[in-house]
Image 1 (cartoon, rainbow, N blue to C red):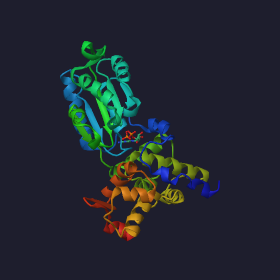
Image 2: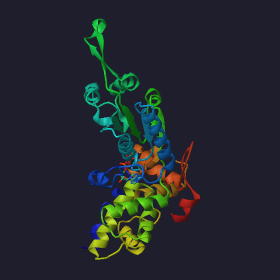
Image 3: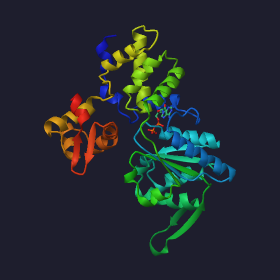
Image 4: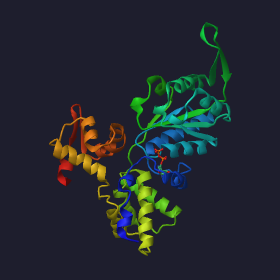
Length: 334
Ligand code: ADP
């Protein structure tokens, strides 16, 4: 295969949001138990205490909210919690729940104690959000019969359940919804060492001959995000296979990733363009988000939700009340 062919999709590879090819792969690599779930130690410990205490009291687990950037393991944790409790899990997402009836049909069919997982919960519409309030609080669903002054409300009892919500934007959640969750857990970017362990586990699952040095190289460029790390590993594995390399060393990983235009810091084309725009067009800033978005031809939400968290966390970008600024670190590499 021509080497240039491998360099397609460069911007997608480091995009932490789920991509079509991840849907199947995410399930293959998804940790099933707390011991499989690497990193996020404090969150895991708190969850385990919550679960044990609930089980000892023979109650239903409180509703839980996971928040943080995409690809860090929010959905995986929901599965792990269900497994630890030994209960069923029903998965959906905010935009998929269009009408109150969608929620009713799911909740009525849950077996008692089940987990109802709503991804992107900040994208629920108002009607659906309002039917969730009594469902979360009283395990009840209110049906309004008729219209106007003659309307009557019929209360339907639901099985007890635990709602697990996941969001990348906790600030967009309404206060009444946020307050109905008993536990709030923030997932942060992983330590590089944890990403290396995740890669070693994934390599084992896909029987890829990944050396420790190769794992280090992939981890370094993964934006400290498990979904991206696994995605890069798949591409590096392909490279090694096509080039008849028996083991994935740091050098092989580095060659494959350079071909994919992922730099040693894990910055991709859009990251670099974003930083360069602020540095060159706006003399390092501060510059407003909308101006940056217009300049890059990207939408503001994607920049704020997907690109900025990592850039800010790693000291490439600074968010000030007057706008975004580049930092001393970014000045060094631009
Ligand atoms: P989110 O819901 O936050 O977008 P996911 O739970 O879908 O993220 O995680 C994406 C993929 O990353 C999972 O399929 C899994 O392969 C991997 N992953 C995430 N967190 C971990 C972890 N702590 N340990 C091992 N693999 C993980």
